[in-house]
Amino acid sequence: MLIDTHCHLDAAEFDADREAVHAAARAAGVETIVVPAVEVSAFARTRETVLRYPGCVAAYGIHPLYVMQAADNDLAALRQWLLAERPVAVGEIGLDLYVTDIDPARQEHFFVEQLRLARDFDLPVLLHVRRAVDAVLKQLRRFKVRGGIAHAFNGSRQQADEFIKLGFALGFGGAMTFSGSTRIRELARQLPLESIVLETDAPDIPPAWLNGSRNTPAELPRIAAVLAELRELPVAELVQRTAANARAVLPGI
Image (tube, one colour):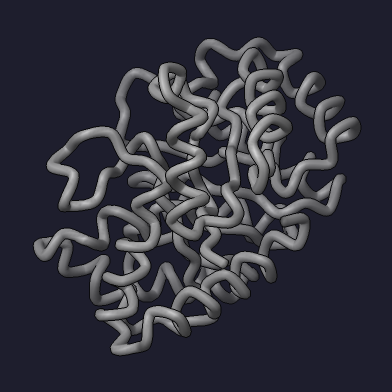
């Protein structure tokens, strides 16, 4: 019943043992894994991954950290993939204002055009919002999409409430497991439970117990247990309710 709403199982970090990683996740109770693509040249690999491994579903999009190497006609290519594949979401898309070597205007152009595509295809979006929550919210108010997930959310309560008003769930994963992540943990504790989904972002954002090593989707049960402890809920209830939330915002899964 566990749903990992954000896991890059197609990433090169899993090339040596992807089958074992997937098997371990299934054995741990992770029934569904959402695999978001990051660039057009990787779309075929993403599709191959989700077709090969049971319980995996795809999202297609151009990640903000990849827009500088993207061609202008990649947006047209994305449209064709959305038309042919009907994925569960457009993603991973968004803005990243933490990095300094990517043209903000080009990021915004690709983000806006992908929001248009999501609206055209009536698909939810998987959002990357690092140091860019207000800028992302500004565009979401302009281009009304059917909601989705603000992945790895690390904003304020007020910003979280704005995403919720727009029909978005908020993704919580490894960062929440660190005792020093006081703001994230407080959000995880206090936000309406119906607005929270679980994720790993594997191979990235490893939880505290991995000491910075590669993350995998098999860590999701322990991440769920941390959230259940923060919410003072039985783990089984937490798992059931976050899975229902994921299905609500990503009906295609």
